Length: 459
Image (cartoon, rainbow, N blue to C red; front, side):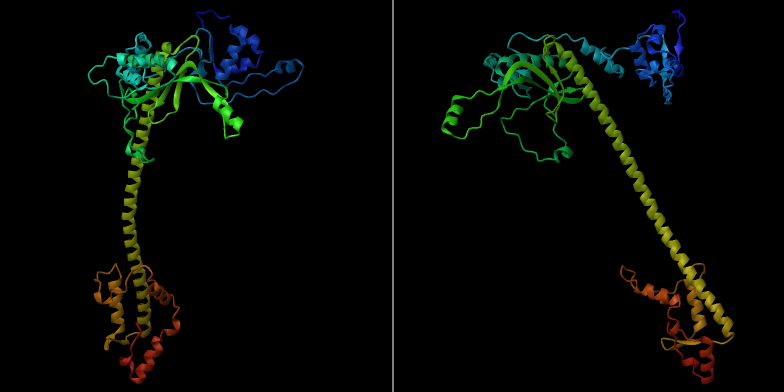
């Protein structure tokens, strides 16, 4: 056994090799631990341990399979998997304080140190409990002394039988008094936002409908409800039900009756829901009056969870808006680039068309030589080669010649007007070759007949 001033520290790999070298009971004795504690430490470190019957099979000469130690991301405990002089880890039953800021830790300490005691008379200190007593029509409600402005405001949510209603009021008064010690006021619940109110139809409350208040815990509204646990018993037919059954009338008695037990329960609620987040019950060892500190701690933890969830949603909303802004800016850039791409395509198309026409004109000039081809434009003779050269120059974006308004296409560029484009592409692809005239043959024949000056070309 290692002395206490020289602690033995094992890594995760070392502990794995020791576990598979001898039975877990013997190894635990060497470490001064129980086999249960050693097995728990191995499970926490994800170290496989031999199963039942493993060492019996080894003693019989067999070679059972040994699972390998799986790799995982490095954790601080992996480098000190087992240390004898290290402090013991707190068990699950011990109350460990959750981490938080210094203000949250100080507030938890204040709540734990509270020592409020329930009142004994029928004159509660909290105005909300006084109003609740009036709402429940308690016999002693006329003995309540009211301060200025205390008769109006929210009430607490209490649903119990008359036998334990006074005790439920005292518990509510104790809870509100303890909450006031840590500056948690009791007030009317906040109104629903329009985004939440629009999901369902909202009706105006009736004039006599009570307003159930809530505790404002660190800025977060949280409600509570005190009710009584009921027990199911077999239903006993009443005289009326017996008479109806005897006469053969319609009678559908319930199978069970709910009998109040006198055991109170306190539920933590959200203001927008009636579902209980957490519930505390009367027990033989701890009545609800002795659990107020635990209730307030649970209120605090729930409020902190709501704050953390709200902060996470706020960050998610900021991130969503940032992504939307980036997408919008990218869309704007794409639209601007699309304009330039269309301009490039237009210029490249015009250049390709001009290049095609220039190639044809060079071939035509090489074939005709110095001969001139005259055509008729609005019944006036023009030089076809000069007109074609002028058209190509104003068409070519690389040429300094300006655009000629007389050569602009006035056909509308709207959706569904693709027939002109199809005809132009068809002509450029040579699909109308049978309509093309032979320049050399026509020029020689017309020159011989003296008819070249009167020829009109199909534009």
